[in-house]
Length: 281
Image (cartoon, rainbow, N blue to C red):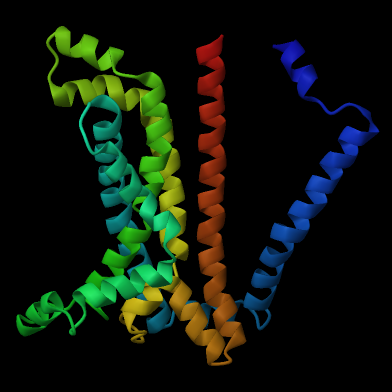
């Protein structure tokens, strides 16, 4: 173990120069924007910051963002698990079609995704007209936001699980089934322990994208104050109202959530590295 630690230390002026350049770039690219956001957020004092943060419209934006997070991340996790399980543990025709559908949100702009939702569920479509006739609000309401965000974030967890589940193969599951375990017990006792860190990593990435999604939500939300504005939309609204202090105050909340997500991502990555090292030793 001591030998491994020594190999990881940079040696020579060139190596230290690369490390210093990486640190400087990281500070400039990430540290400086964070300092600017929090500096402007508290430029008029903590009382002014709290007045903006505790306002009804801000609380509504926070609540809608958290609601979107609570709904979309578990549904994306279920979809990712089901898709990865179907693609890696069974043989059937049409796998390439499912893989293409999973990859589709990565190749489509979020704004295009929002427009597509609007065309499908808007009042000009047969489905939208039916929903409107039965007083079921979808577009320019919370359900439309959830549908748009689900489309955008649906591939994240599946993309993290597919390579790992392909690597593990089906030997462990087949052995469990031969020994008498059912499908659910096999998944909980055999498959899930092998993919738990990749699943958690995908959940964190998905949560980060949910928190920051702007394009698709902007199309389908209607920008109704106090009702359909998530945190990114509300920041943009305050900025265009020339309320710089308010926009930076709300941005500090979103930035804090992003920092928490980044810290969780770093912890999970460390656990994944430890698991890989223990598996190779």
